[in-house]
Length: 424
Image (cartoon, rainbow, N blue to C red; front, side, top):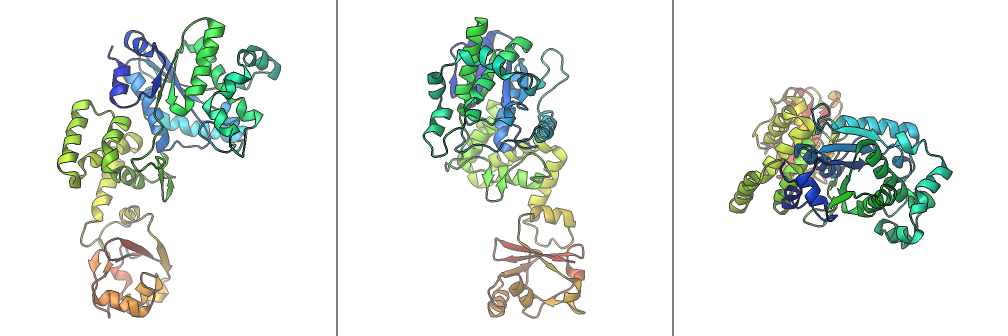
């Protein structure tokens, strides 16, 4: 069996690990789990590293378990949070769990022989515990001093917000999860990001005390960009895996826009490409960074995994439209995909009149210029484009027949400032 630990270490995905985990992954068939917080019905790109962790575990012959925290999700994990989370109703948690399961099924094989993946809701046991029984069987094995030493707790204690008893108890619940999975599934490994290290080691300690045996933990670094900003956050907000929340085109563009410094690490983190392939892309990036070959492969690989090859083809086609000289004959849906986040203005068909609307008037109306005088100057100087074609005649009038699909104009000022005009 190939050594998963060495693979993770090469990919930069080992921040901390218990002493014996490398030997266990090299010599044993390990059952491991990672938890997913059901605060929304979709995962986001920040969750992909966790998903890939389980997928790699399975690909190396081990058995993956995804715990969707239907129980702990009703409490909230204080790790990495400066404020208390809003508690969710049971019905909302159940809906979110169902949505996450559908997304995990794209990465994990639940039917293969030998090491099929499993999805388990920790509400199956946490929701059935009585308070006195939980305190007796779990709580008594942890001192308050031990819990206060955990970074997720100590950081919150130092904040103005503080920490409620509800979130303070989260460590005990996650430790109990590890014990339950050890008993029910023979699970001996928990993985996650570094902010989970305290919770993971608490579970290892509980198994040691109650079952007298060793369990393992492994965590990877928290994700940030080369500029130090939080990974997965853009000006438009969170990048989701759900196509209804983030379109496949926007998803593809997110990865395509990766900086040169981040491109190779992201290929290691978020794809299954092997070392020779990534080394070749690293050399290509150093030799001709302007071609952005690493970013193109990254966007293609990740978007294929999340949305499928057909959506990749559509996204790549849509991206190419940005450089087409005349887009007036293209399908409306493709154009809208390209300019999804661009400001837009609705224009009633009646306002076109019999011979159309003047370009200068329209440029001023959508505020690509502060006044008609400035709009006229922009047109005269060749600074305005209509459907990607330069328009320099101040007498130009736009008609419905000239609109893309009879309903859409793309106005552009200079090289980057776009505005959609939708005819209603």
